[in-house]
Length: 168
Image 1 (tube, rainbow, N blue to C red):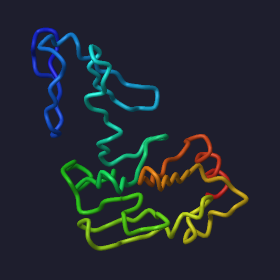
Image 2 (image 1 turned 180 degrees about the vertical axis):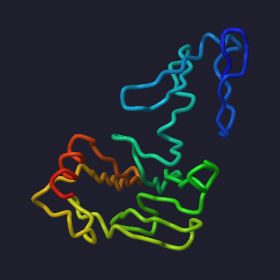
Image 3 (image 1 turned 120 degrees about the vertical axis):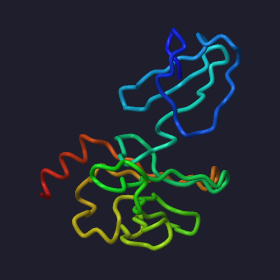
């Protein structure tokens, strides 16, 4: 991304996507209240890139973590290599894989060896997390759409904060 003087100000390691015209003013970047950074081509009203589709090491409220069986793409979080080195570490968190039905959250080492599992999502809780019970809403939400081939998890901050306050 360039500023008005064509000085390089930001980039992602993602694929370069052609916008509708050579006029740089057709591209707008905005940060939504949810924390999603969106780059949009306003001429054709199309999202070119958004941060929620490319998570790093932090999951924000309403952001989706999961898998799409049709596109064979998923979103996952990757830990930093160390506290002072933000390069890719060995731990990743995924909100389900194509083989995981019902979906569950899994922490992987090097994306191949399971380190921790939440247990399957039963539409209200992860069954292997004893502190989650049907009486309390943890803030987590699971959404599975067989027709679209998607299974995602998200959370609401206000509900999660109240849950943690009662259980810590």
